[in-house]
Length: 261
Image (cartoon, rainbow, N blue to C red; front, side):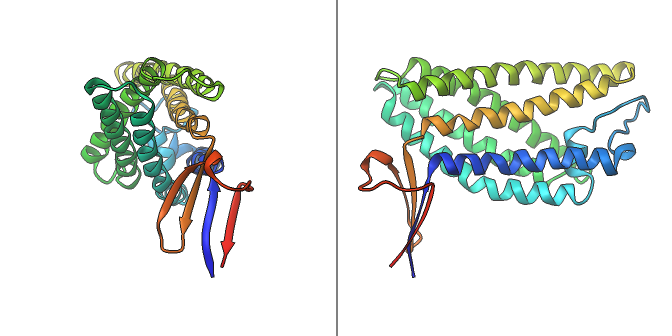
C-alpha cells in the first residue's frame, strides 16, 4: 500500500499555475474560433476583436466548464500556499506587533482573493450580476492589496539578509505587480470610454488589458516558486500533510515520489 507521497514545491507551483493559465488561453482561443460574433458583441455594436474575460470563460460551452474545473482543482494548493506564506512571514519578519498584524492581514487578503476567484468562476454575470460584480471587486481589491503589501513586507521587514532566490522572487513580484496595476487602470479607462463613447476597437483594448491583469496576477503568485524552492510537500497515508525544507530531508528525491510500504 502507499505509505506517503512526496512532491517538490516548485513542481506543485508549476502545475498549480498551469491549470488556470492553460484553461484561460484555451477559453479565449476557443471563443475566438467558434463563438467570435457572440463573444465579441457589445451593446454599442461597434467593431471589436477580442472577447472580455467574462464572455470567454463564463458565457459558452465547453469553455465555462473547463475553466470551472481547472480553477476548482487549483484552489486547494492555492489555499495551502496561503497558509505557507503566513507561516513563512511569521518566521522571517522582525518581531513586533506591526509585523505580526501585517502577516495576518496578508494571510486574510490571500484567502479572500482565492475565495472571491471561486465566486467569480461559479457565478457568472449573466446568472447573478450583483454577486458576480461583488466577487470581482473583492477579488481585485484583495489581489492588488496583497501584491503591494507582500512585496513591501518581504523587502523591508525580513530580519535576515535576502538570499539569491528571495531577491529573484522580489524582483519578479515588483515587475508583475507594477504591470498588473497599470494594466488594471488602463482596462478600467478603456471600459468606461467604450461605454461612454461607443468607439470602434476600444473594447478590444479593454479586453487586452484584462488579459494582462489575469496573466500578471498568475505570474505574481508563481513567485512562490522561489520563496519555497527548498520545500517538499509530504502527504501520508493517514491523510496528514507535512511541509519540510529540503535540507531537513534525509535523502535526495525526484520531483515526485510515491513510497510504497
